[in-house]
Image (cartoon, rainbow, N blue to C red; front, top):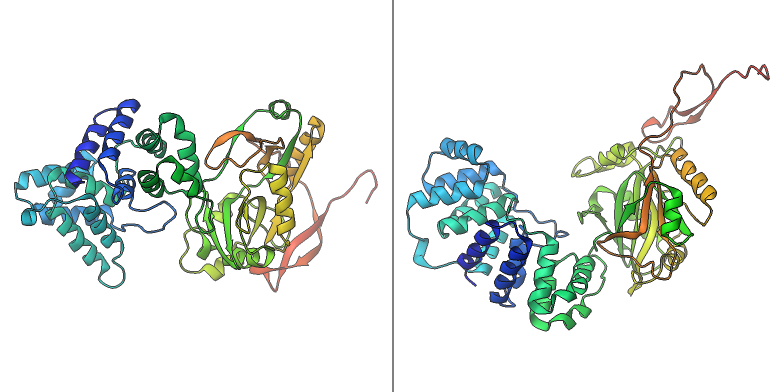
Length: 470
C-alpha cells in the first residue's frame, strides 16, 4: 500500500472523535494492507516502529527534526522554530512548509508503507561518531521524497507524538473486526497481552485468521503486559467481593519487575515493558542463582532496602537506579535493592497464567531458593477480617504501602494486561508517624555496610522508663 493512502486514512481518523468511526476507518485501512506490510502499518499507526519491549528509538530531538525540516523546505531555521512554538505540532509545521515550497517529489516515485518504515528504521540504526548528522541526512532524504501530508505524519512519528488518537485497544478491536468478528475481541486482546506486540498479532491474523492466534504463546524474553488491581475502601468489602476468603500480599513501594530466565541468563523488564537488565546487575545475578528451573517468567517488586537496618525504603530511592548507563556499580552499593517475588507465570516452557493463584504461588515457592537479593513476598490466606486488618497494619509497619488481596478461587487466573476484581489493592494515604520528639541515648551501634562500611550503621537507642526508673 502507498504511504499516501495511509496518510489519507490518518487524516480522516484525526478529523473525528467518534470511536466507531475511527474503528471503521482502521478496518478499511487494514483490509487494504497486505500481509507483508500490515505489521508496519499497525506499528506506525500506534506511533512507533517496533513493539514496546524492543528498546530502539529514533533518537531525534525536536530541534534536530526542525533543523532538518528547515533545510528541506529551504526556510529560515529560526522562523521554523517560531512557527513550531506557535502551532505546537511539528506535523502541521512540516505540512505547511513543504506545501509552500511547491516542489515535486524527488525522483517522482511514490513511497510505499515498507519503504517509509525501512527509512525510519535506518534512522534508528545510525549510531556512533557522526550519527546525528547521519540521522539528519536520512530524514532529509525521506522528507524530500514525501508529499506534505505524508511528511506531517512522518515527522510526528520521528518525535514520538502521533496525535491521531488511536489507542492499542482500538487497534485490537479493529483487528478483530477485520479478520474475525467484533465478538472475538477478547481472544485478540489476550494474544496482544501475552506478546505485547500488535504487529505480530496483525500479521498472524492476516495470514492465518483467528486460529493462528493459538500459535502465539507466552515466551521467555518477550514480556507480557502486567495484571493490574482494582481498589476498595476496606477489608470487609474486599472479603465480600472475593467470596469470604483471599490471599493478602504485602503491597511493596517499589518498581514492579518481570524476570525472564533462560538457562541461567536473566533479563528484567518493567511494567511499561522497558528493559532494566543492565540497571540491576545484582538482581540479574541473584535471580539466576535462586531460580531452580531451566526457563521461566517470574514477577515481583524491586524495593530499596537499608542494608544496615533491613528497613524498606520509599520508591524515590529505587528511582535513582533507573536509566543509568554509567556508575551502575556505585549505584548498586549506594542504593541496594531486593526483589520480592509474588507470582510465577511460566516454568520450564509451561504457561501458568491460566492456573489459579494458589497453584501459581505454590510453584513459585518451589522454584525459588531465597537469597539476600531475592525473596518471596509476605502473604497470608485468611477469611478473617481481624486477621487481615492486623496483616495490613503489619505491612505498614514494615514500610509497605498496604496490601493486595488476591482471589484464591478456581478462576483466579493471571489476567495479563487487565485490571479486574481478582486482585484488589488496599492502602492508606497516610502512615502514622511519631508526632512528638523523644529524648534518646545512644547505647550501641551496628557495623556499617555499603556506603557506611568502616564506620557505624544503625544506632541502638534507649529512652528512660519512669515507671521502672530504668
